[in-house]
Image 1: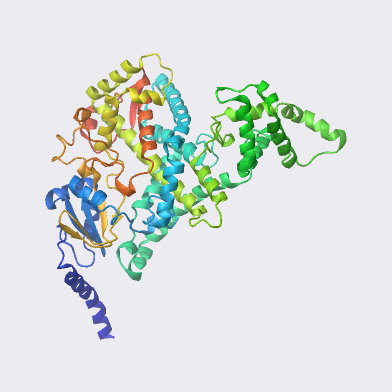
Image 2 (image 1 turned 135 degrees about the horizontal axis):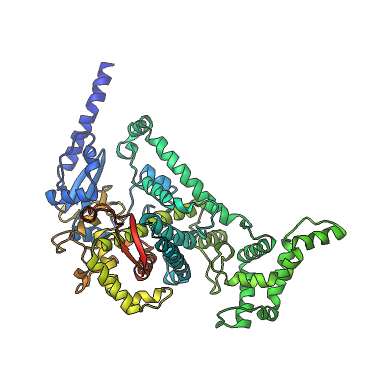
Length: 605
């Protein structure tokens, strides 16, 4: 018994000795002293990106840490970042696995957290070609413009009543509305299971899972699992995930059920079944659409009821829907049934069903009733994936599953909503704190676009130069991901002359790199003028500015995110003037650089 006890006590020391023996031949990066067993785990709370910046100032741009038994390297210079993201991109494009990431990614069935391999490459290709291509992004333009128009209307009401506006609620709702319509085919304002006011909470809970590290992630065997169990960490993680999983499942169920529930009655039921059957039968869909577009031409901006009489096969399709899916499958006999049809308005609805179907095809406001656009694009990213899942052949090497769909929903929420809302909130914060820049940006916008515009379109974005420099400066000063998603080395590599062994986690400190005084003059100041004569961009080729990452793991939704942020900010700055509430201490707010504004004063321009 005593020998066994002594062995157990000596086991950690033996492990440390063997590890020292193994690593003594390596030139590891410098870093703070590490305690036995736990390493730098006791310093974890201090390692906010700003503090990690201080860490690099003390130990250099490549810093070695160890959390429990997990080695980590923090990168804080553009040169070291280039080593990782360009020179050794392939060797370190894997993702580490943690309990939280396993849950939120549905066992690595997403794009963001999946390990590098055949399945990730297939998902990445799908996202680039089918989900986030230029054509697909352009097809969702009307959604972005509609939601921004709705935002302008709501803010105008707040301005009229002189009530304060919450930037957080306003911008999370805007971005959430767009992402839900584009990504999930759900109208946030009408959804039965997405709370418009709770979208920020859903997103933040998703983010919490990605940031949560369990002791089982840091210590081998059952030791970490026991600590997680006793501290209640396991239970908390499971509870958080259970709520999110229910939400994701509701989204999928709503898409996968044969007829989506609506409130418009039997005519809507008929239209939904028509679209359901057409989507399930690509041959018939093509035949119907070919007839419509050949007969009516490609140049029509709106449809009229006269157009209906020119379409033969279209009417046969509608007749088949009435046969296959009668709006009232149970009928009353004789005159009772006819009386019920008359009293309920069924006759009138059937008389006008063709007109309503026509309206349906151009009704872009009701997302549930418009899964197909006139240009043939499937509506909603999740719809595209469901379609691909249903059309897979037996010989396909990669098969989409429900978990892949949930993983994609998770990515859309984490990367789509939070990052864009965060960026816009900080943009408005910095502009309100900097009246000179605010005036310069608004003068350019209003001079270039004029004072008479009733609505902003995405074409307007390309007319503005200084506005885009301002957005670039926000990406620099407040990257939505201060630490890029962690990578993990798949082989032994060298970074800036230091050894980085296999299975080491690599953290790119985008925050520190974007505020490196060796690269940026007055790095902590908000100054878009710094880019007036600069060619530095944020799309992954300049390693001093990495808001979207770089290399194989660069954010696939970057183009959509940029457009969303720019269009939202342009609407806010064109139509409204912004300021601090009267009773707020401006000096204190302006000096508190770590806290974004929330309640602000808005007036209609």
